[in-house]
Length: 227
Ligand SMILES: C[S@@+](CC[C@H](N)C(=O)[O-])C[C@H]1O[C@@H](n2cnc3c(N)ncnc32)[C@H](O)[C@@H]1O
View (tube, protein in one colour):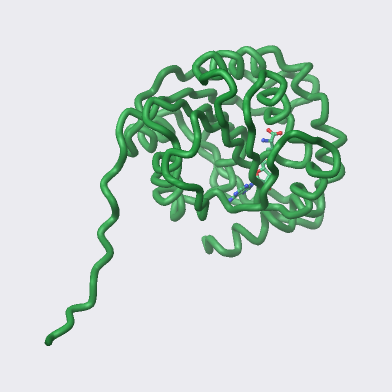
């Protein structure tokens, strides 16, 4: 599958759905005690007034607002410019930026914590290496990352009306493998069933990991110059 087509499918889908997303997800967290408890366990490990990056915040920025209300300094990024515009218009106190998570260019060790709720489900295999390497780079040593994804073995396009958006699921082994291979230690990993009346009907994985070491710089091959 072509990664650029995958990226374009996400931008088009979320640019079209941003208002619906705001309406559907603005207050969703109040109906999800499991997610709240998970976020609270993550927050406990972040220093007072620490800085956290929220990856793929969506138009409703529901997790970012929860972090903000807990006294953290929050930066949120999203690939869809419409989601970022809508979030900016509706919510204050968060630094919203339009950015592709696979191209993040924050300074090394900028954040005490990172969260990514249902956003790395839109990243194809070809870009996972660079994503996990960047996550390691921008998180301080001993910083925590909290990730939630749909569990399973799906990899492809979901037809949503006239649009097709790429998404993928993960097995617990795949997810822990990517983290362990990029300088992280798993702190907890759990799976839960969908909440039956309003959630997409999938099993979900919730994982917290800690950065225990940095990664060596990638060697770029230099052209040989004969002098
Ligand atoms: C399912 S929504 C989740 C939104 C929010 N985290 C939540 O749980 O309500 C996925 C979000 O990830 C964003 N996204 C997808 N690919 C991305 C990428 N490469 N970089 C940054 N954001 C991305 C989408 O634009 C979308 O807003």
